Amino acid sequence: MRAFVLALAIISIPALAQTAPANTAAPQAQVSGRVTCGDTGQPARFATVQLIAEHPSKDPLIDPSKEPKSPEDFQKLVAQTMAAMMKGSNVSAITGLDGSFSLDKVPPGTYYVVAQLPGYLSPLTQFSMTERMKADEATLKAVKDTAEKVVLAPNQPAHVELRIERGASLSGVVRYDDGSPAPGVNPILIKMQEDGKWKQIDPAGINSTSTDDRGRYRIAGIGAGKYAVKAALATTQATVGLGGGAPSFAFHSNMGDALQVYSGGALREKDVKPVEVGPGADVDGVDIIFPLDNLHTISGSVVAKADGHPVSAGMLNLMDPDGKTAVRVALVEQDGTFKMNYIPEGQYVLHVNGASDIDLSSAPSGPANPFLAINGLSNFKKLKSYADAELPITVKGDSTALTLQVPDQGSTPAPGGAPAVPAK
Image 1 (cartoon, rainbow, N blue to C red):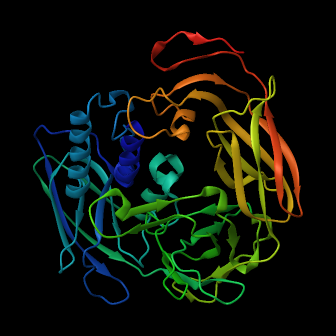
Image 2 (tube, one colour; image 1 turned 60 degrees about the horizontal axis):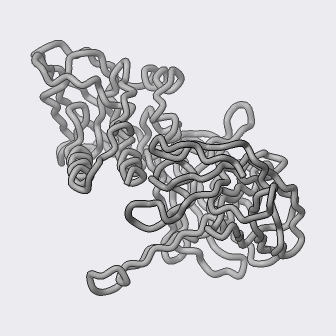
């Protein structure tokens, strides 16, 4: 249950860094204005306008300590969260057909006014979703240096005129090396920083661009700089059939099959070649090609080093030893086995963390999900936890009998304050 609560929190998070401290008591301030597109001179219709407080609140939207204790409480929380998402807040608005907006119940204070519209630049364009949520000093400074500042006094109206400029774009095709397109893939934009490192950014707040039936994509509203694009195989699929029963909806996700490829044909971040993008430029031909040959399967099991029994939960990371980054993630199955497909040839380190024995019959309701138990998000009893372990591997062909041994790390208290289960 708590996992879904956290999912709702994540869905609501884009407003986190922009939310002013709660203040429902009088007095209140009013601010209105208009947003215009710089390239056309026409109104910016249905753009979002946000007032970012000079000192943003970092309080969580959902308090994890207040987990609902009953289905009724959970339904109320879902309803409250959805209502907040649909209505927005007193410091955000959407412009009308004439580009105007109005906010009438704003707590007095100092704010920075930010407008966002797909394809156009905003002070937030250069940041990842994580940076927006953190709202650290560097993020706030960049906003303060470029956004319109407004000081709102109690019961006094203020007016703001904003002009947004069209950004640059990257576009291309995602396909397989036999020429067939790869629809439903979500390309992710990465930008080279001054120190030569790559950083993922989200021009529109949430990078949700997906390829069409021809495999084409376009990411717009970006600033000048050096960029590349990465994408993973579309291994997560959801389909809806007919009828209202469970069989009419199918969802499948296998993180262990999500081969990631970079534009220019690179399979590892260190080999990526950046593309130079000028202000307002439209750069096409930034293609991603998924290879079909020389891909292999690795599989095996995770067992306790002490007695060799398979563990029932854990998470595996296939690490690139050069970049020290995870190129693939998968879960340990309930019988201790794991499998990853579409692995390019090369040197890797297979790392397991969160390995544990759990009582799969202990969940009060719902399907067993060892992943939630690993992260302490369910009521499964964790019988025993193990230390992390690594296994260097060389992939030249299929490896189907790998064994990772996890050592003991002592006893672990079961959830709910139950006595600790002694380590075997």
